[in-house]
Amino acid sequence: MERTLRAGRLATFAYFALNGFLMGMWIVHIPAVEDRAGISHAVLGWLLLLLGAGAFVGMQIVGPLTDRLGARTVVPVSAALCAGALVLPGLAANVWALGAALLVLGFGNGCLDVSMNAHAVQVERGYRRPVMSAFHATFSIGGVLAALVGARTLSWGWSPAATLGAVAVLGIVAAASSAPALLRPEPPHPGAGRATEQEASATPRRGTPRRIWALATLAFMLMLCEGVANDWSVLQLRDVLDAPDATAALAYGAFATAMTVGRLLADRVAARSGPVAILRYGAAVASLGLTVAALSPWIPLALAGWTVFGAGLSGCVPQLFSAAGHADRDAAGANVSRVAGLGYLGMLAGPAVIGPLTHFMPLNLTFFLPVAFCAVAACTAGVLRDRGPGRDDHGHDQGQAQGAAKPVRK
Image 1 (cartoon, one colour):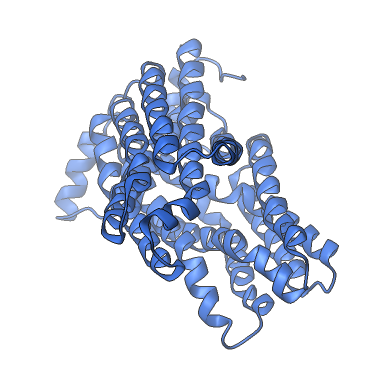
Image 2 (cartoon, helix red, strand yellow):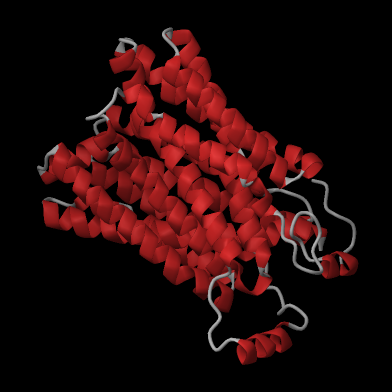
């Protein structure tokens, strides 16, 4: 049993890294794809909305599908779809072809995002301790690897179609080879059928619980904060503090590095202090770090602020995904799709919200909107507690713990 669980965990790491690598390769090749399609930056900005729309639709479709068929079936198919779709933007020669390509790529990415997170919840349930943040750190590492590989292939003069095509083939192979190690679907929760019948007699239609929507709202706010760092941190140093381009680029580097390191450490902290503490104090630290970055008149202090912002934010979103997945074992995929979907919209909304605000105030002052969102998350962190019967402080089924052996430590 322990060997199967470890293999499932390693496979989950592989899919998270693959997802980060695939999307990182797309990001690295955006300028080359833009030139091939012959479009402007403005048109590209609108087309990227199709990428987000496709991801959102994929998330909503694949969540319930994962609950029905099991992550073992859905994850490899989603990964193969995402990998295969990667080559399409490299082949696009006009705006229409690129728009269709990004819609399909976004759909595949959304399917993989939700299904692999649902499987991560299943692995975490087996381990009986937090392991979600490390998976999200692996996604970031995959993105870093993509930046290194993409930079090398671009320096060799490879075309986007050749590079993305090769990566697509390798991605499909990786998706297929990791599939046998995924965990088998869990049996239905004891008494689930009886509870469903009782609820059906009390309410004709069962909707998404309010707690899931609360988690999704927090995901929207916190991932909007992450989107602000991705898109505006470099511009803040360059335009507000007059930093050289090379120095300004360190702002995002500091944020991303702190996010990755923080996620590698967050699981151990969550195991000792609980997910509520991770969200409460992490969001509070993030709000402090972004405040320092926004108000600092000195470049080194601003870089320190972005670092603290990334470290505080790093463990917050994985706790929301984990809580959504553990809220109802038989609807884990659907619940994760709600939280991930609204969170993804928040990531896209970051640039859209901050941009118009700069017409009314300096860029650094617009950052107090994400500061406020972090403060709200810190004050409402208690929503992570599942007060339902038969659950422990981490939202796991106590009944499963009694039937399980010892928790797996490694």
